[in-house]
Length: 489
Image (cartoon, rainbow, N blue to C red):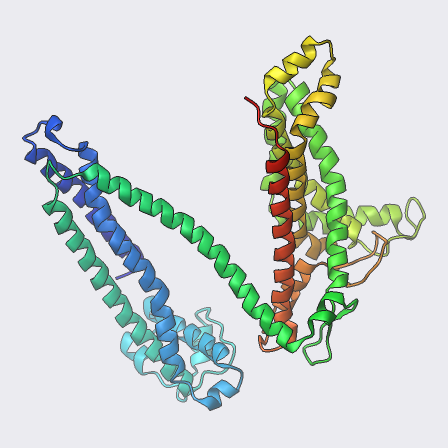
């Protein structure tokens, strides 16, 4: 049974459990709602949750475990000779593509199920036939890969049928249990509230465990990298010249310099513009202007970063070359091409304006009105009240917003990939092309990376370094906000 159809069946059974449990509980009270321990809806939700929750938990676990079990089983069928051509991971990738291609051919009617299960790679141009269906394979289809793909399809089909049976069995068992205990004396409200509390706790744990998983995946691969490459050369090296053929220099200092340089320029643009916009919108703009200007300003936050990157590459870069390049309007000859630190910094600053503005606006509006009224009542002008009362009171929150914007700037990828260039260098000239940590993470993991080489594993070391920096900025921002925020009654 297809996964979508199975989910529809679970939804239908949950709805049926809701109706049956609610009706039975109401009937056990003789139609008098006052005799029920809980409201009728709680009995219905008791039935729906008893059916849906265990079934969905098993379904999610099954979806996570089944592919890993099948991959391990099929991978054991691949000989050392076949794996030696590249590695087991790449061979398994081809096996999965072949299996998916055979499934697609059967669904489209290009092959029968019997033919797909008995086809021989040495007698048929399997790669050509699957290519005609839009399935691209990385290498020739050998008979060994074909047998592995057919085994993969068979195991997957068997696992899917077993999954359907187990999940539906649990759903029917839950339906029977919920119907049996739907009685006027059953504490349905307590049960439902405990289940909902458990769901909320589980959601919080998922978020925490996801973060922990990301950190550990970075740590393990970073440790593997430092086993192959000296940590001192990585953190203090001034040359970045990766070479997958060996003899690489992987010093992070040029990348960190460009990252911080671009972030500084971005904040130099975003902080004054965003802060002044927030002051105007919160203190001077009328309700009509604010209702129009604030949403328009926040539209910038919804623009994809790839669009900002294209804007930097096609618009801002050529404009800067026209002004600061050789033969430009100013005749300075500082800029050689459209990709430069200044290009990426200016566009990133535009992207961060709504971030700084929105947070600062909320913080300024949180200053109690009584402080404004007291200042004005003592004879201060509106501008003096803003400068001497409102901004000092909101300053810790504004500093926190700026630090959060800085961490956002440090982690930006697409704008710097398209706008800053690809040269890893240490230079004070903002019109030089440079590259950042995030850009190099992308480039080092692009293509068929060999994760046994330091040139590929360095991406995890770069990511770990960036993670520590942004985490430190976020923690410092929260510390500033909590330590210096004044509490108003």
